[in-house]
Length: 141
Image 1: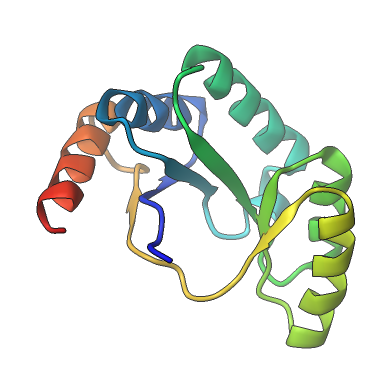
Image 2 (image 1 turned 120 degrees about the horizontal axis):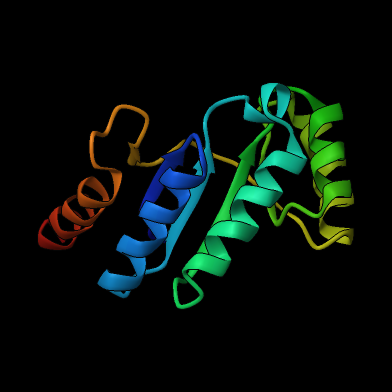
């Protein structure tokens, strides 16, 4: 399975920019929080950012992944909050337990190595950066 083009987002502006680029390009993308964001920003913050970005770009097709680091408790909180997908780097036995709980709640556990991603943190114009990055990826296929 080919990895979705992934944008690392740090705020609502980044999410909106990435989804605008996705809608313009007609591709499905992944919005992913920065590493460990569940611990310092929280699941409720991420859920709100995703909801507002989705409302601003209803034609964009995407999945949103909250990074919970190694913290099973943060993953459980994200599941309770209704986050659609989480990344967890806890030991395999813990991940297996969390995956069972997540699946029962309709949440997907993203595992494996991270693929190529565009981190929008320092992008002076996040939307332009996202559009150019998606175009570059399309050419390299």
